[in-house]
Image (cartoon, rainbow, N blue to C red):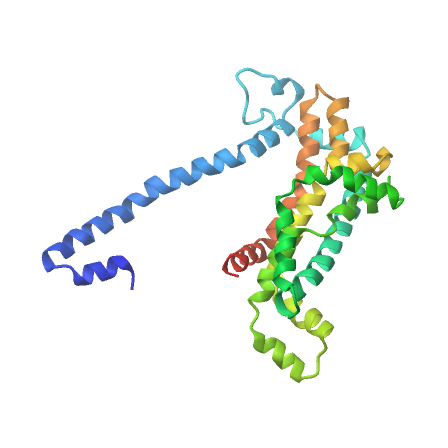
Length: 296
């Protein structure tokens, strides 16, 4: 029973009508207050993306029109077509897909294999190891760039895609998220598998990992965004521009066509589309994964 219902039940008869009228007024007024606030928040967060989309659909002259046009008049898709002619966009997209699949796959493999023993196995110093791993989250990513660059050079991975992916092949946040998901699985599942003769690796692969699908989907979304939008580290490691992923390639489009903003906006919109698709496909699993991590 809710707090309001309990209060109404215990209230004197003359006050029950007052409480009921007040609750009805709040229920009727909520849409007029809540929905405009939600709409305002949506416009504030989506504003930059909508403006970018509007610029991508404008002709060159309309970009600099005053007062600014939010709705393109006339709209055109020519900018999206021209970007493919100006630069080898498919080549850069292929580089980005390779780097993203490579990085996300490594992250899933290494993070699940790290999180599982920290959540389910018993060994001395388990909690100390976990807290030591989590404590590294306070270190800024930029602080490790020099060390990572020297390591990549020593390993002979400079100017290679492995050199781009390797420093981000395991994420502390992903380990934390997956550990919390593994903890929520009932111990009876594990005991039943052991009684049936399953080994540790089979329990991990066939029972535990499928049961943390929401957390895995969350890891996929976060890592997909991180690798797809990777910008600074590929420029540092890759010496050959043909090996660039989409983000750095678009930056060079920005410098080559500094006065043609519709092309730049069109290239940026194209680079965002895969992220939106991945999120729409996995959004249900993503929400369940975040809820599970918070509860765990």
